[in-house]
Length: 422
Image (cartoon, rainbow, N blue to C red; front, side):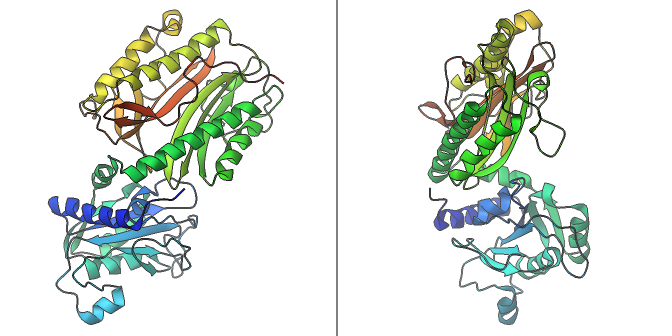
C-alpha cells in the first residue's frame, strides 16, 4: 500500500510554520529517534516521511553524537542575515520558498527519499546548532519531540546558541496530528485490518501445550509478511494473566506452556507506513470460559463497545469515559467482585496515529471537556486484573466520522468463544 505523498508532507511543513509563527516562534526543530523501536519517531516522520533505522549508540566524543536520531529544521521565514555564500554551505536555496532541512547520520537513503533537503553529519547535535544559526533568526525556537532529546544534548544546544531560546512545544505536533487526512485514514484502516489478521494468527496458535512465544511468533510473522512493522506486545497467561507481560526484555515466555482453561491476554501493536494499530483480546485456551471468566471477558468488552457507540462529532470525551464506566459498574463482574483498581489510572483510551497521543479519554482528565471531531482516530481500551480470576483486556481502534464511529479493528462483536482445541 502506498504511503503519504510528497505534496502532503510539504503541506504539513507549511502548516507547521504557520502554527509556529502564530505562537511567536521564529522556527521549529523536530527531533526524533529511530532504531526500529517505533517509539518517539513521529515528529520527524510526520514532517518528512523519514524514519531512522540506525539504533541509538552511546556518544563517542570526537566521533559521533546522537546516533540513531534525526532532526528537521523549519524556519518560519527567510533569515535576512543569510548571504549567498553561507546559503550554499548550509543548503539554503531560497528561490522565494522556505525550505526544510533533515539532519541525519544516514548517508545512503532508499526511495522514496525524505521530503526535505538532507544534511548528513556524524555529530547531529553540533550540526543542528549550526543549521539553527544559519536558518532561524535569534529568538524563540519551538522544539517538538522533547522527550527524545537527552539532557546533555539540550544543554549543548543551549550553550552554543545563546541567542536562540529552545522552548518545548510538543503541543504544536499534537495539534498538527489531531485530525487525520484522507490518506492517513486509509493507512489507519489498512493498519487496523493487519492488526486483526495478526491477532487471528495468534489465536490460531493458542492451543494447549503451545508456549506464549509460539503465540507471539504467529502474530509477528503475520505483520512482517504483510510488510507492516512490529512494534510491541504485552502477553500473559494462566496464573500470570493478571500481569501485563514478563519483566524480561522479551514480553513472552518460551517456557510457559498453555493449558486448557487458561486465560490468554494479548495487547498487540504495530504499523503500516508508520500508522499504528493497537488492539487487545483475551481468550480461554481449549475450553469454554467458566462463569467467572465469562463475566470478566464480558465486562471489558461491553464497557469499551459502549463508549465507542458514543464517538460522534461533538461528543465530549469525558462523557465517553463516563459511559464506559457506567456500563462496567453495571456488569455482572462488578456486581460480584466490586470495582478493582483500574489498570490505566481511570483512562479509557487515547488518540492514535503515528504514536499513542492525546486526547486522553478520561472522565475527569485534562481533555474531558474536549469534543470528538470527524477525522480523529482513537483507541478505546480497558484492562482488568483480579488475582482470584485472572486478567483480561479488550481494545478497538475507531475513526470518528460524521456518520458515526468506524471500527478499523473489528473482528468479533459477539462474545469471544474459546481459543481452538488441539
